[in-house]
Image: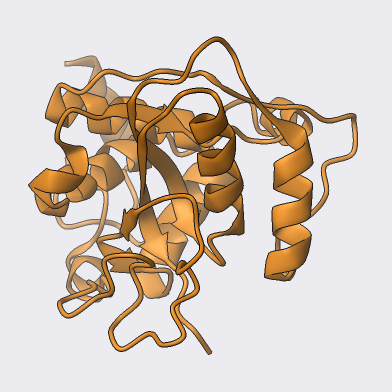
Length: 226
């Protein structure tokens, strides 16, 4: 009842384009739902890019497989921004549902979900950690456990990832990450966006050094080449 009263006072808007959706319980309007850039087969099972991806950017990565349901473009990118920058936490539920609906069963079999941690300064500024919220949403859909065992160290200034190349991302991620305790044997890393794969690679290397046997990467959106 309270939700309906709030909806009457403040009509819900599409999380992507901010237009009024067709129904009060919808997070995306019909045009944005139709415009979601789904990634369809064939995609490389190692880097999640459309095939052929040669040379595969994940050929030397510490994670053995990667998957994303959508490309980082259009309404999918807007949805990520809504969660990350605007604090639209319901977006994580929709993103988690889309991850759970399409993720290959073999990727999640026996896995523990481990969110890629945000830099402490960014987490404080935003008031939330988007990958952690996304991992919890995915866990609610799959029943898989979540382990927040990865830690990212850092001072007040967080190095910007936007526009950074793979080498810069990998160097920053490698030196700032640690694992609390022993890592789960089978890990599915969870993040909002898979860009170069350098941060996921750094996380996987640290987890494998802490005892993980198999690490895969799940991100809601995949940045395409070019």
